[in-house]
Image 1 (cartoon, rainbow, N blue to C red):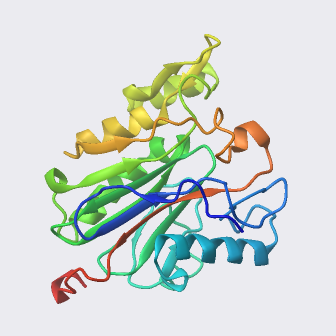
Image 2 (cartoon, rainbow, N blue to C red):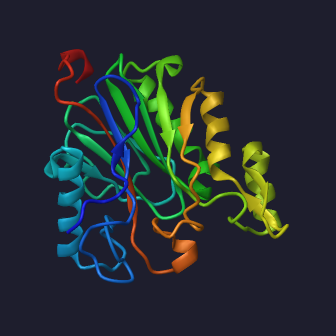
Length: 256
């Protein structure tokens, strides 16, 4: 097994770890070839477990303390204290104040969103594709973080690789529906057809909640072979975004 080429921390503030993976490394065979972290795409469960353990080892976190969501393109956000808190619940956003508990979001064209308020000791992750962006999962994530002490002006964030506006073609009616609620998502593809720029829409939504310290990974999943893309390949794997409070952060009871 080789070390994945892109599992590196994103600077979201002191005491916070964050990263996006790619598909390099791992043990999954084609069509999931590489570091597939998705457990519901048809890959061998043993391979997925090995890939998740490998990713955790590279990040220096505990694979057994990772929260994996059952994502359904909605806007529900859960607060979690352990990997078992979600049970069978389907959510597209998670928030924690527990050091060492790793929040994961799986994607293969949708946008992975990672947020942190290092001062309050609160982190969150969301899966925001077209339906989730339309439903407002990222604003809901900010609101849930605020319930646990986060302040929008302090929140830093990262939006990971996703299908870009030049490639993400949709019917005109769909573009109009999304743009009516999230104007910045309006796009035209390279072919001159209706498109959506989901990441631009998320940036707009975050700004509307007072969150402006956000970095955007410019890579398009459809255009980048090193990333999984459902739109490009159909059956394929999932890469992930991870965010966590590092264990050396003060375990303040008011955060729990």
